[in-house]
Image (tube, rainbow, N blue to C red; front, side):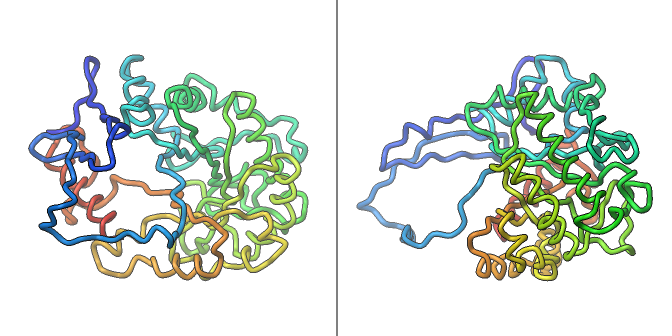
Length: 370
């Protein structure tokens, strides 16, 4: 069976754990037989020990768990708004309400991505360095609904949602190639096109704030490390580690410190395998003073699970030991693309329960092993 969510009913998650006593444990069970977040209370008998005893050292602490969430892509908004209004709210309840997953993190793309139906930016007026023509109307349109979806999520939750923004590529006129594919910003950090890009990001934050949507953080650039030999079929700006460092130091950092002083800047936002090769922003004190976090993506986790290749988790440990005051955040994890020979099916299925369960088991084992 699969989780049921239709026009008449949606499975929910009990939040009765808030009333547990010190000698009780709340247990949630999801099973292939049909349990869907089934909740029960187990009583703990401190006088009977029939299994190993675990001691928890609360004095030794590591990273703070920032939260769990997902991305407000164009694809998400378009598909949610294909549903009836009742089902739309049910979907939002499933992710954000007290009877759902209670998501507290949300990534918001700046402009179009590989989860968009086309390429667009918020300012296509060539050399508009002052961003006089900047507009997010595309995100407010009936073809998108992205802003409305975020607003409804914020209204659905009883918790604070930390939103962070990420750009895949700037407007084409800022790029050397005059395209958003495998592109580079014109000139050098500190020069007019790089300063225009920093202002472009700032205007995005301003415009969304006017819609009641405020951001906790921003990544410098989505997956900036790809070489020219690694071509992408979607929007992809390339930055060397030195360019990322200098962009933060000379343009993005000063602009955000002036316009959005509470915003946290997240460097990296790329594969774990690249972390130790791209430490330039962290090794420069004038760049590091603007950086709060390191973003990383999960895709090498799959190497770890399926092929025992390590997954590059050692690089996270090394980074944390070197920069303990910089938080680490998993900023991207797409699903639904694994090949069928791995036993997970070639895509997400809403009708094939065996395929859905197999995919869920893969995700569960990945989490346990990491």
